[in-house]
Image (cartoon, rainbow, N blue to C red; front, side, top):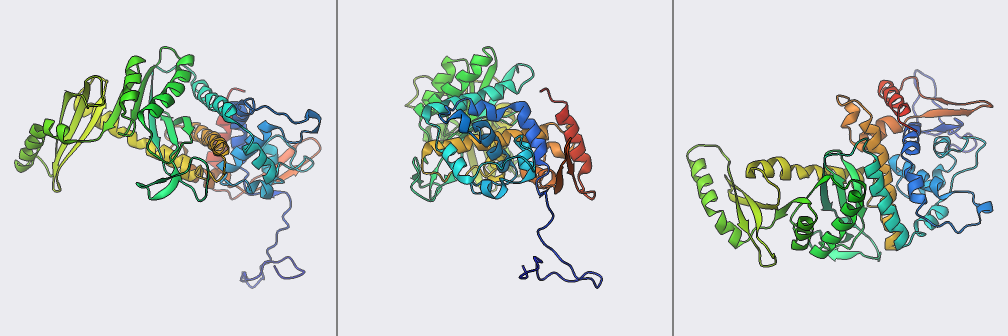
Length: 446
């Protein structure tokens, strides 16, 4: 700024008139749309659910920032594109965020600072975190108006690079990095998150996969004893311990299966038929499907294996899945198993659009708590887009698009004696979508 004037330099004149720009607009916010998410959070009560799992040993008469308020503030910051704890310092007096957590925009006290948030992140122990993860599964179940007939759980892990000596970080040769490999579980039909679990940077073994499924599905079955559950994952999760547990507990599964010489010999007739079909002009790429019973050395029983064999310009390619589901091989592979690719988009929304890979705390418990807060932000964004009509642009918009167009809205906030006025730009191009979603949020049950 030019000394003594507060005017930003370097802007050209317009129509012969000089342009003066300065930060003196008063009670303005660049995140007026965060009030939409705040209303959703009040309905879902995510912050209260998580805060109830923590033991607050502070003197009640001296508490300025309740746990629920801090969790709500942090989740809303993440949804608005402020994933770091330092952002709490920059926005603690922002009028929209103060209103979002229930404080008056001008006369209300400022929100918590970064050191306070850091103390909160380092507070939960293993027991509190288990309660929180159980609370998030309960949130998933409570989000359905009626008990579903069937749910399809996608399970996968993703690289979360670290840049220090954080607990649980390991070198992973596949990713060529030191990282965590947190497990993400989503319900495939709705895209709703079920669990996000921090873990070391190595491929999970069978005992670990079975343990995760036992805890997560056990919580779901406690709410819905009769619901049909199908678990879907790649070959990392097709472990004999996991499949045996699913079989004992009436859980359907469909997992990828790594190829080996025995499996390739089994599908040799399919590969030959596909190659002959391509020579006969059936197409540039010809696929054949088949199934058979197979038992690896580590399996106690034979299981159904489905093979997809493709003959193309690059030669033959064989893929395998193992399942206990009935159905035609082609349908199970193409329509059910291949659809698990959508889980990568859900992880992308969690990891990229909401920056859930900012797990930079030293303690593993603090990083797990961060993943829970990022999952809370995911719930807010998913619920907002889910309120739009099925034919609406906003229904399928990515989270970063929703943030840019609906949350990042300039607003002037004026606190009066009897009311608070929020003035949005007259030239705001997404007024129709904003108004429609605000009306839908108002219809949510309290």
